[in-house]
Length: 212
Image (cartoon, rainbow, N blue to C red; front, side, top):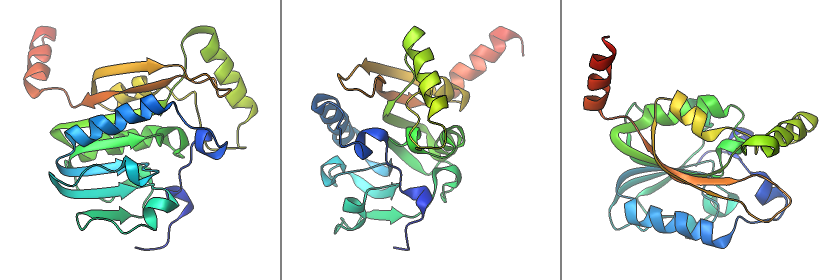
């Protein structure tokens, strides 16, 4: 493994402030990952060894933006720690059957570009699973914007990043999303869900209906 650059050391505000997301939310993410991880998997933001999927059906596990605990551990032979930023993932197009993203977009220098790269490396019938902060609706979301503007440049974490909007702009279709509101001072809702490329048949039918 090469030296880890600053771009790969993504730490969201929860982790830096010594807080944790609700255990039941993280446990659900881990359970879903263990059930779904097979083939080639890209995991962005793994923080603890318990986050990693079981090796039973893995062909390859690429770990990006992982914690020092992960980078310093003895990993399974299928696993590889990759030293890279999210904005230029060093993988060919359509490389992964599953991409898992855990509290990484809020800390990426350019989360919009990061989602575009995730979309690029995800296979046509692959899935993205995510657990992230996001901007709240209504007045609370406006307050998040104001706080983030006041704190501009003081920390990387952006708890007001509109994850669902930018997933769609990256060309991904959201299959499921669950919201939770942790009782902490961070005041940013968490969203957990799945996204994928739209089915080519659906895209063709939609184009036909639109007359394009």
